Length: 153
Image 1: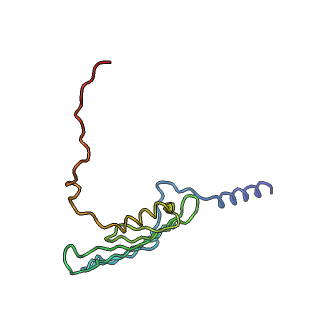
Image 2: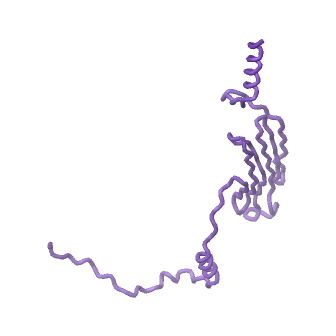
Image 3: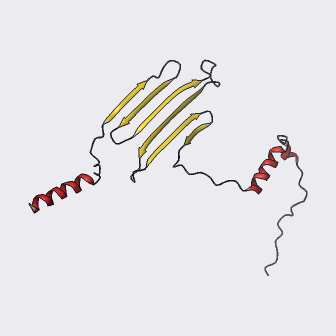
């Protein structure tokens, strides 16, 4: 009787402990959908895996048909997964003419700009733009003297 209780205890402990995934274990794809790429440059895809990874993305061409230099490929998407600590990591993003712009609770954020620096930046924005090439027309206000050898001591 005592042995069977002990065995049941061991089975319970084994079942309750998280199983570490081995490198050769295959993770099933639970869901996969894909559409495109279409003639107008649009597409979309999504997938979900057995280890709680979810990802999806859709894209299109902004200003489609306006010609090279005017058209911009845009991609919008999101993904999520569980960290080794068990926390949900989720990220949404857009990528367009302004670059890759991710958003997520886990991403670091810069500290606020100190008020004195912000005041200086605001002031610099009010100044008129300088003329291109005007820096090359500036004459030095002092004349550098050539190197003069000095005595040994």
